[in-house]
Amino acid sequence: MDLLKELTEANAVPGFEEEVRRIMRRELEAENSRIVTDKLGSIFGEKEGLGTGPRVMLAAHMDEVGFMVTEINKDGYLSFTPLGGWWDQVLLSQRVKVMTEKKAFTGVIGSKPPHILTPEERKRIYPMREMFIDVGAKDAEQVKKWGIRVGDPIIPVCPFEMMPDHDTVLAKALDDRFGCYLALEVLKRLSREEHPNTVIAGATVQEEVGLRGASTAPYVVDPDVAFALDVGVAQDGPGSDKKNKPNLGGGVLITFLDATMIPNTRLRNLVIDTAEEHQIPYQVDTMTGGGTDAGKFHLFKRGVPSLVVGVPARYIHSHVSMISKKDTESAIKLLVETVKKLDRSTVDQLTRYQ
Image (tube, rainbow, N blue to C red; front, side, top):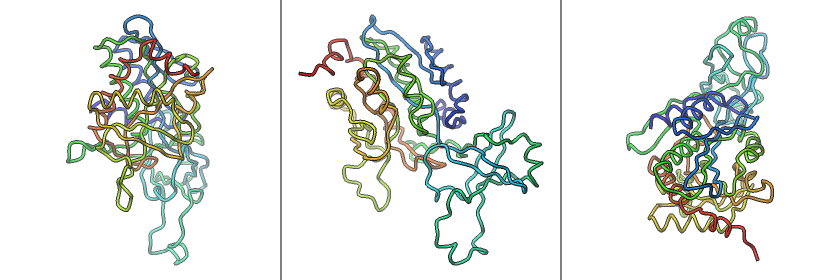
């Protein structure tokens, strides 16, 4: 899992995806694929199979949730704003990295010790707007001398680790470095298989702040079919109703519904049939909140049959997350077998309405 480790430990909040983009370009070029980019920073590798069949898009997103410096107060503390969705309660006392043009500075999201909290303060949720980041500076002048500026990105800190069960992966940014890994692995395996189409695999930018790269990338990819490769929410923790809910180790996750898209049902059924044909364990996700890049992909031009394929993940949109290595392998196998079926006749049938 060296590649997944490298991807998760790279730093790339929305608008600052360069570290991950370099890794993606290196891996895509290693597969001798033609590099395709938009003008926001999304990157894809294009490889033809047997002839020039339908164009199949496999798209993750490079960005992770993080923050941006908005103010440096006179005592040297940093105010910040979120980039992506955060729950305030997961932030206090967590380590972060403030990324300047030349250097990264470790900081901590400051909190009061319990000894000095009033009874009222103990009972309330501490809002993000009242939090600050301490980088160990004496005053604002020292912060500026170090090169920290308003507008600098702030990255959560969490090292990659394989847990003792040899299956659970713990890391930051699995939303969506998992998808980046998945896109690269599927492209690599398809290069050793015969398939009847052109595969364009890679990742978009700025998904976490409004699916922005997903609005521009289809213009350079021009897909006939699109798969968004992303994580879903694992619902297997204490106190949850685990029945028919996504869980780690239960298989690849196929999304039937989210707030941005109802997928093409023929494509959805083709993927389910493929999983059952090849005995690939799968799970189904229906969620009325949240969304993925597929919410934009399926609306491109006259419409593109689209589906979200991924794995369940615990604790996303926090400093730490978990996925299953077995689920990841199931996702790779399912996408490889599905792409092999997507010839011109099959793709035409996806949108042939009476």
